[in-house]
Image (cartoon, rainbow, N blue to C red; front, side, top):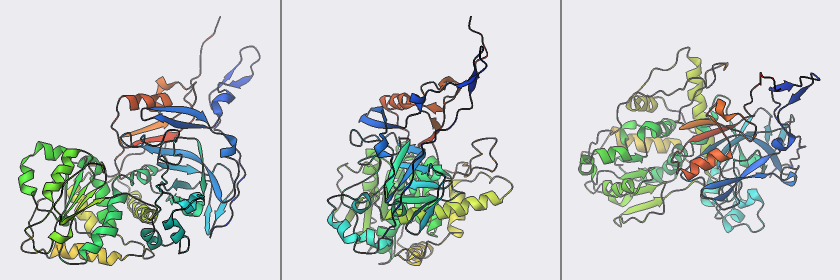
Length: 495
């Protein structure tokens, strides 16, 4: 199944450029102390507090069938990433690199030190070498582990998720078992920000479309689909990426968000029972209650029995729906690793098109971008065990030849100017850095107590994260990059 992987460990810490000279001996010395350079992990004490803890050497020593990664980037959702078990390191979405200079082989894959490697957050019993595997994993290991359908039929039932039940990305190093099954290579042209933020809306949307919507749409005519987001200005591109990826007609979809629903109560009457499928990515109870009202499509015969309501956040809320509507409390699983790789390929294509242009793309509205996406889609990898053509044809046929009884609902997304490619994060960057998905804050994560944080508010330590937690921070997309400390050279004499 997987070749043995061994890796020698050399913990190489980044050298500081801020050396100082002794005035008497003229000997250069470094302001960092060795104790500050010990590998750290940030352990969850409770939902409002993290504690620094030293990583034991046994945890990062060479082991067979695994690879050691130095974590470079971690994305945090302050509304949900800190509700894991006490003693666990939070952070489900993180990207690392191999700290040694050697190429690591695992199965048919080779991992180079320069590769950007994401640890797929949703693991399984057979990957973690659990002593007592669930029945689904026992069934999976007797099938083709490289097939999407294997993991769709037999999802792991032990809920092994990094940052929840497994140590996540708020640490310096992590040891990953079975790298050929656990790691996802991030294409060079794809932003690590986008790679992490795909898990918020885009990947769940794609997974639901492939596993639930497509089979229903192959059964007959399709009504409209409503997508309720927390903020369309921040999350619409996530959905449009999937629409482009599946080559769908954008006119089938209506976007709205919690703010619009509250500010425009007249939408309640306009949307009441008008949508066959309602997908709720918003977390507010108000949005979920409105979703119940908007679904049903009772005016179109034959669609009622295929009406769905999908909840992707706040899944514990108790709701009451008619018997003909099926409720999905949808979560990701290991099978979606295959879909993530496909989305990354689509992002790589988008970034390649953007970087081939000498001028930045002009600002576009969400609706304009949606039309562009629908007319120039990319195909899914034929290696996956589902039909891309059937997904696209089912959706597009219903959109291009609507039933006379199908209501016409205008897209509720506001026409606002939105940049789909950010400027370089550093003016010294050799090429333009392209990100397609929204980021709330882009920060540095430092573990050196001697760091001069006053130089930049973008440099955080554990105490800063704790302050955000105690302040009930509601940011969903905070991106941290592990960096060396910010030091200053002193130009002063001490008498």
